[in-house]
Image (cartoon, rainbow, N blue to C red):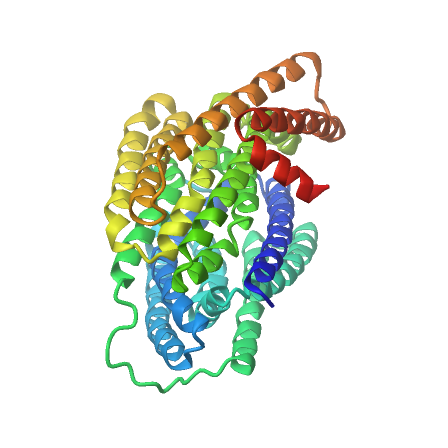
Length: 498
């Protein structure tokens, strides 16, 4: 299969994967809210964020591993592939052991951080249940995932993930509706997700020649510490909102934050699906030194991603509050989920985060981890300082405002770095695209407000009709603006579609 064909298959499979994840991510939390209430939903979200801190040792090195695999895979150098995988296996086994210690510490001390109706034992068992699948991922599956990604075979792991997500959804619905405790529900989920790493291990053993006893005379992952620093920063960055609210606010605030996060994370997941096979695609072009082809593909991919991201998040900004109010209707507590200003700032923050993906992907594909690590640390510091300073004055709005400022800084930095050090193109190309993004997003908001003023939404069916009509109108808007600013790309893209 050619690399462009692999890119298409990976992208399609990734999109399906993300859609399934979004559907599951909407159904299960809604059932948790309905059957267990906002406090339990906030507790699960809070524990998941504390557990996600362990991933700061994941994709930092994971990105380095994948970057180190591009050249030997392109040259069929099985010896070097074996060296990289052995070094990665050794590292991630240590992470699995560290996870055990971390989970024990959480079980011992986390219950003292919160004000909950759950007792110490119930909270501790919930932490254990949520950690089961995470341990399986680190101990068995992650190195095999990285190998498949590096070989442009991500469609295999995406396909297996689709299966376990559907199985988990079915099991979750059965357990919740039959009156199982939240602890049993999450433990069942963890056991289901353990199936996938075993399948990937068997597939890799059957289809790749890996020498597990290869001698490593020198470190095949020299940039792993810089990669780790980058992902420490990324993980803290993505967790700051929940952590700050957990410590300085209430579980009810965490619940509001997490419900809105379900929606924007769903959009973020869908946006990231477009980047699923691009990292290995860029990495293969870099490994074979096809710079002209790299620049040509990157310019087109950048334009496509910007337009799709702005369209999706513009629609989200208009529709998210009404959706959340319908989604949480019937929940029997006094938590206020009508927070439109918070929703807008959160959507803007996630939109910028998604817009910077092609630039960060290109930087990581080139293996420039050490050169860009300081900016990732600055991003976290900016977010943390602003969030802590504003949380008491502005509540959850202050927390997401800190996130917005920090991701804008990081995006501008990455575009400058990429233009000067990797693709060597004028920075004005990015600023032109960014101005067009602002124009399109602003017009979508204006149209949305006009539609909202003349259309009342009281049911999910009315919301869906409103979303379809607004979506069609906004597609026309995006095309018109792009015909003005990017005529050649627009007509080429439309010819491909039709």
